Amino acid sequence: MEYGIISIAIPLLTIFLAIITKDVIVSLLGGIFAGFMVLNGYNPLKAFIALWDGVIALFAEGWIVKMLLFVLLIGAIIRLLTVSGSVERFVVYLSEKSRRIDSPTGAMLLAYFIGVVIFIESSITSLVAGTVAKPLCDKNGVSREKLAYICDSTSAPICSLIPLNGWGALLLGLIITAIESKVITGDAVSLLVYSIPYNFYSIFTLVIVLGVIFLNINIGPMRTASPKTYHLPENHKEIRPSLYGMLLPVVVMVALVPIGLYITGEGDIFKGSGSTSVYYAVITTLFFIYLLFVPNGTISHKKYFEGLFEGTSHMLPITTIMVFALLIGKVIGELGTAQYLASILQGNIPSLLLPLLIFLVSSLTAFSTGTSWGTFSIMMPIGLALGATMDLHIPLVIAAVISGGIFGDHASPISDTTIISSMAADCNHIDHVRTQLPYALIGGGLASIAFLIAGWITL
Image (cartoon, rainbow, N blue to C red; front, side):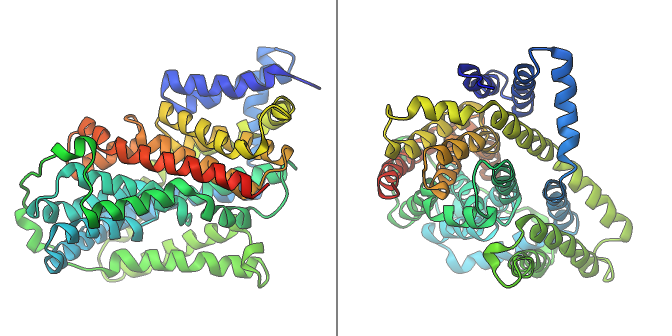
């Protein structure tokens, strides 16, 4: 059945609700319900039943359950590293070693390095980088605003470029949904990997940050940002510094993912199952953390499981977003949104402009809603179906959605990563937004040019 303009109205309604409510779950639920209303002859009771039956139906698919459990268990790992004191000892260790790089450039490079190395989750990346580098930045006259900018610019971008984390789980889930729905063909892991070189905003942002660090580039409001005095807590010397409690579990988890891909792909890492690999990687890591911390008394058996359950509970909002994101992808697919869009755009907008258009629309959505994950959930199904219909290079389309989501999130004052970066650097939130925006716009401008060129080259 042809739904015409209504097929476009549903995702637009979802975006509108996200802008108005600033709540991704509410906006996704509203879009899904409206979509099922259309699919069920505008019968609200049938739409309501279809919505919740659709949620249950998702759990019938093994890969979806693995993805959701992966996200929950990542939260458990993060929490266990915290309650075991590993994060605190890691911070103290780096704080002590930072004396060797006692300079403005060294202080900023320390924050940059931590932001690149810790790619498990964007929030912990910002928090650890800000906490560790803040004393050294204050000592060397680096403003808190610049530290917040570095933390913010190395959190989401690096998590998207090294997607062995919850970001990867969400993106793989969205891509696999399109594959399972016959919207696109190919292997989800391969498509995500091949999209990384096209993730222009993340790449440009990381390069721009290095330029800011080494060349001391201050533009716009950053020129007037002034440093503050800060001292480490008096009891920091009582904490035993150590790298291993933090790094060993991370190394184990990261190493197990390519091993899992190799095994499930029967020797071909790019044909392996991403959902299975990350699922067993986090389970094995949790066993490793138990053996690492419980026998030597770092934490008790009881504390281990308390931390495990607390960590999983912290990830429930993200897991809920994933469930509704997967469902709205199916609804948009049934409505034929992309096919209708393609019929309108065919002959009216050159195909080479579509990657840029997808990037800009994703950017606007993320800026308005303050969430890159919500933007991925809304835009990825549309972008992939549109890309397949218009015969675009699918990895480029995936990258356009990712880059747009991160750019808009990076520039948005209501973004959670922007807020956390302000907290990590202990600077005024509005000051952080004002000083960061010019750099984000430069990265977004360069990315726009790159997507325009890439759209032309990949035709």
